[in-house]
Image 1 (cartoon, helix red, strand yellow):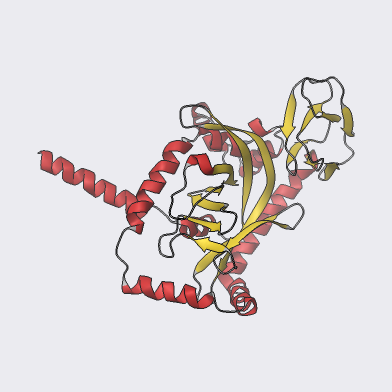
Image 2 (cartoon, one colour):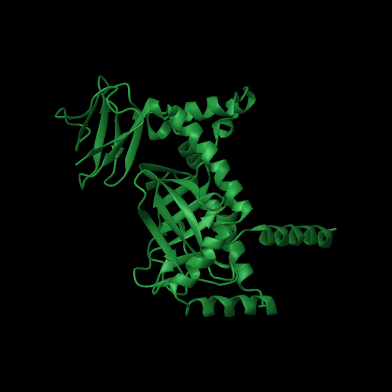
Length: 333
């Protein structure tokens, strides 16, 4: 009986390991050009969950591939400003994938800063030293795949009628602070310690597996691509974007964007470019929302807002006038 029980455990473990997606499998599953919302300044709660003191501008992530179609990197661009937020690729001078067949992370060989993707979470990391595996202590920010998460806010809400997709998106857009954001609520509900450690344990076993002939051919293709010019690689990526499947994906994304824009008139985005952390106050409220430098906060555009550098100070500066910039953004410098 003990042998049967042990066999069942081993089979379950084997299935879990095989089902675990690597870095690029997870990115592909989330969708090319998917949108992610970032949160930083982690605060551990002691039970595996975390709170985050800051949020970052949403980014669109595009997968970069070799001319034979093998994913080897990615680029994240700010949606609001259409400029690069961050990028890493094996085909650059310093980009390094830790394992060509079962990649856990990709990092910059000089700065040791890098990235991991676990399911719908993109982790930004620091100090990934050669020959070591990342841990939660390396995590500086977590970017969460943006999608409708109204049904996972709380057990009580799961029992209620969900309502239409448009109404749930409108509720999300009307959120006036980070803690009211469904994406943030989802992130803070996760046991990130367990999720991260389980992922590393499963991927270590995958990376230890012997290479097959197919694996060796893939490695050879990537090494060959590293010797090619960027123009040749760009031509391949452009050909992918010309396929009917890719065009259907873009049409779907355009419809979702149109729904966002239909309701975006109720909010304004406050962007911090002061070089310091600031605290945003709605007129008449003593509660502040912290916005770190180069990040932003989306709020209702129907109120006046003030900011200062000390949440306990009564000396505030005016930054936004009610109904003056709905659907747009303002920058505090």
